[in-house]
Image (cartoon, rainbow, N blue to C red; front, side, top):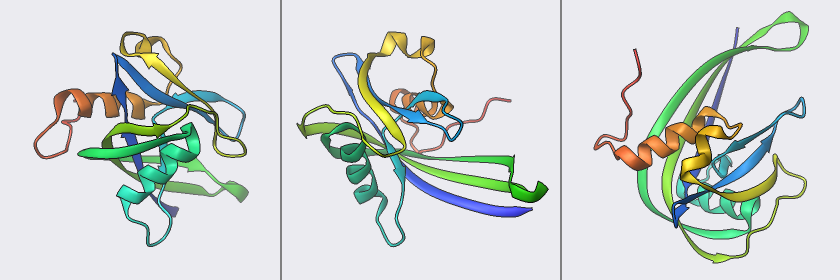
Length: 151
């Protein structure tokens, strides 16, 4: 099994009881809401990654004001020629404060739309589990930056 590691940084930006989300477009065309952010470039600091990615996906300048935590996910999925991949994702999650810019949609990237959504409506959106994880980190603010897993 082929091992894959991806390190990414994301922002939870909440203001006026709304959260900023970006709509991710999967390889099969499926669209689901996610936190703005994405993969680190080699040698890049996660702080710089989240600043760059939020601007790319939403048009906003963001200041990461708190490190909320690091989430780890592991999945297996099919690869070419019948092989399987053992995927491990590390997601560094910050609380972000919008400091400038204008909301716009990304063109030619992994997302196609950005929007503010009422916190009360998030559960009804078609979204990835990272949104729930990020909002839980934002609400609970665990001292060690780690959420207890449901058993």
